[in-house]
Image (cartoon, rainbow, N blue to C red):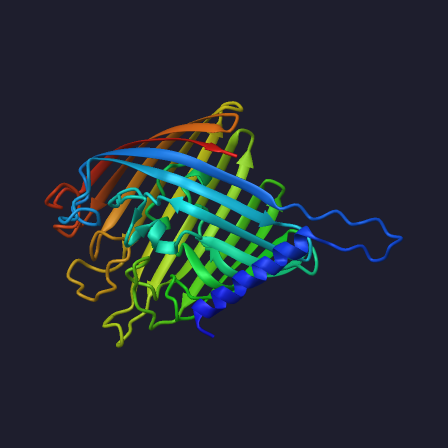
Length: 380
């Protein structure tokens, strides 16, 4: 079955699930009518502005030169989520527009061919699910990745912009996922189309263990087909990735350190002459001063294992050329009052062994960039 036909079938199943969730018939005239399972509705609407010193020389699709704008204002989120999270038949869907800003990477409009909303469509996440028990379920659709502690959309994270490690990871895939939980253990295994490849298979999975009520240690991975070609969501899409994550909360602190290892195997069909690798580590954290104010922070380091003379098309897995390295630092104070939120952000990126022409500044020769950002919105 082609993916387009599978999507139509799954959407039809979602409609059936919605009908079954909203209308239930009593077993007999003597039984009281069962209450319908409620469908949850929530959403977010937000706007963000990013000011950049040392703009990216390449990557902005709304400008013929590819050079980014020094000041860019976008609709960061205009999303509605519908979900039926209870019962044996469940479903969920998130629809709307979204911006995916990444530190050190060129910005683009919220809706433009090849970026942001156009990458994963106006329904970036949708699924139907069968849950025969509280411990086990199977879901199918377009689902967000298991890898990495950073979520997809700006409002879901302690920082406005995503990090450099997140930029190497899959975001959404189309496939089928089984999830199982027992005691302190939880696990998921999925067969999908990897880095949104459309017609190539990949296996993605996660195993987690709760060492306490406040701490979880997880290992996640994705193993795509070695011949998977690149696409708009990932220039190199045959990357095998292995991810170790720790999340913990101590008093007012929440911390999420993690490590990511990336391996792009050689492929004659793709012209990848060598097996190329990259690795990185990040520490994400947040401190809650009170119910209104919090401070989020992220520091990360990424490195290509290739050298600057490496000509294989998969030699650059982080975005700054073969042999390059990068540090990033991000600080984000947040204020929330009722449904409203307001955030400010300062971030910097410093690149080592940069390939000339693809870095910062209009000529792409600068190795560092600083950004200030603001975001305001409402969640309901």
